[in-house]
Amino acid sequence: MNFETKYHGIIGFEEKDIIRFNKGIPGFEDLREFVLFSVEGNEVFKILHSIEDKDVGIIVINPFDFAVDYEVVLPENTLKTLKIEEESDVLMLNTVTLSSNINSITVNLRAPIIINIKKDLGEQIILQDEKYPIKYPLIKE
Image (cartoon, rainbow, N blue to C red):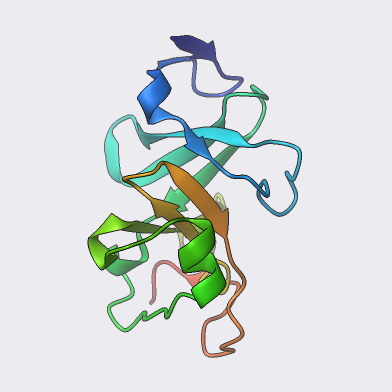
């Protein structure tokens, strides 16, 4: 299948690539189906894009690529909702806020997106641990 996005052109995907967010994503509660693809020419950033709205694509990053001390214990209800059985089932992503100033690019460590890669189910959770900021600088001076 192909889907035309507003900013990333036409993306091709298969039914098995669809990640379902049964609760939606905060701010986009009505959108439930997304696909994940890499930013062309950049393996660090990915786009979590709605296939229901061509205007909605969220830039995400794997937190373990830059925040080595990031540790999240998933709540029991999240494990059940996403049908997670093993740690290897989990892909964790965090949203990125871009800026024209590279030193102002931030990552939201407080609200990771959790995806069960075996069941193609996702949910964004809000951590209660205040040691993880909403605006964590991606590049530290």
